[in-house]
Length: 214
Image (cartoon, rainbow, N blue to C red; front, side, top):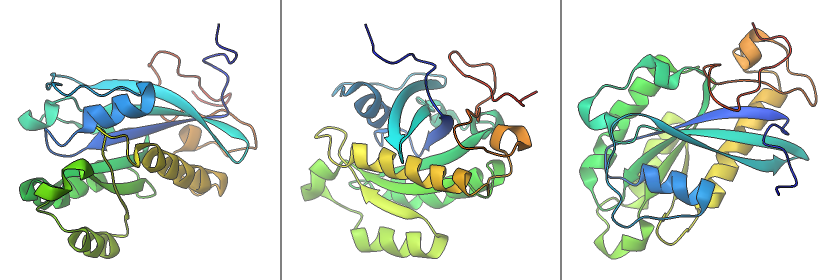
């Protein structure tokens, strides 16, 4: 039996995975939440999400991570996908230049639909294929400096930096929330130490609302 209840957390943060189809978003999600990798994974239609809790500054942070799961190829992602998100991993494949070129469009869409205080990290995935690299780290660094994003390269296959990427984005979100700078926290409620907040759509399984949510 698990020692901690599924509802035993201090904060609930919604993080979205965005980027072109095939860059490895689903495997980043499964590696972080279940420590699994499927070499023959294939796109599915719809939106999936998984959860995992981590510790930040002595607080239990429950991450609710959403994956577009192939929907991006149909450009059918709606504002509902971004609603309530306080963090985003913008993923490209370091071996495919076009996936990096499309990052700017994904960022524009994210900023149109998400809160301006959303923490955003650019993720160059598939670093295990560095011998096939077509996007240089310096290119990504220049883009991130211009757009004010953090940057990391990962390998879902080798589990390289996957934990670090999610830990960093969740810590960045926590810092924003703890400074009370996020206007949408708990539907406008002030964040108090130890308060549980809901930053999702409000109708998801295991999603606990703050006491002052409507």
